[in-house]
Figure 1 (cartoon, rainbow, N blue to C red):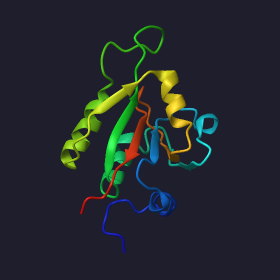
Figure 2: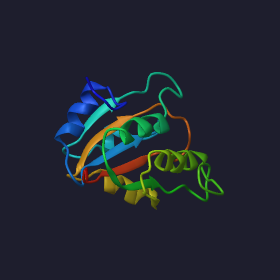
Figure 3: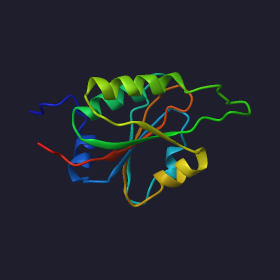
Length: 148
């Protein structure tokens, strides 16, 4: 029986094979998962219904199972129809989740098109598609090293 909060069999299988520097994308409901999947990555769709599940819920489960050494967000647009005038509210949720899990990682935004490039790499092992409706909720995690 697993002792952590992550019980999804496929996600556990993939993270069990992944190692240091492996990348996991937690994608919001707007992210084009099928066209940006890295060559070695698997896709797990958890988008049951709008808002179920959210990126923050997935992050909290992952934080119980794996060490995280870096967290990249997709930088929000400042002009155009999807523009925001500050950090998306979901980023505060991510910071709170990291603090609650005692993970000392700062969010590092990456420009939108560079974010797609960062996902489409050999190190990308998993995309978890959510139904999160928040804009710019995509989160790219880099797996760290277990220290205990």
